[in-house]
Length: 296
Image (cartoon, one colour):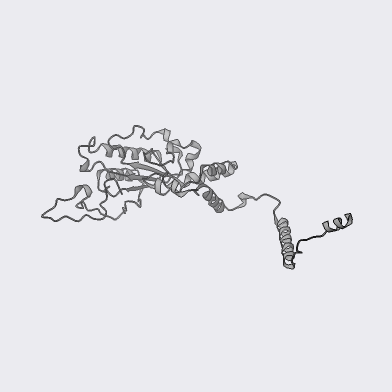
């Protein structure tokens, strides 16, 4: 009986593999052997890649957000710093990239600060980007674009809005464009009775731009933009244009307002807050560019 039991234990009751299964297993084994033979023994030499490819990889790591909707609410709501800056990837991704090696840190950080638009002064909105004063001195030479947003707190500008050596503007030697975005022009008659004086904010803004241009001689362009209520012939814009031209800078126009070098604004066109009175039931047509005083 013991011999019979031992014989039964040796019997394989499973179905024998089919011929196609045997061939498939043999093919998989051969493929795995081929992969093992082709795997490089040395680590991948990242810096052997062309600089264009390395910058593309940096861009993917730095500016690929995990959740787009979240980042849309943290970029601010005014100016190029809120619309032109690409959304950021999670902080952990950026920190890990900067800690890979000294050379990766230098290349990635330089690319990061070059591609961002940084505000000159803090503004009360949802932007989480640091102002130029908050950026460590070692990164300031990489900054290429700075933005000044005018119009908020026009009755009492913050005392911290001063152009001094603490901003580090002299160190930003690669900056070529200075953007100025105007939310509102308080010199307009509609602000009569609310402002300190007609020319107070105009003088305040003009002095800021003059001081910035004096500290940054390497700047080439001053780009102006604003909300639809701002007029090129207004006192504020005329003062800012005067400062830019006096410093011999080229004037450029941003996309929001739609100004060009050749346009001529009609001073007879009424704005939302200066509509003509109704005459015998007739209402003057308002042109499409007459939006709200404080923008869309």
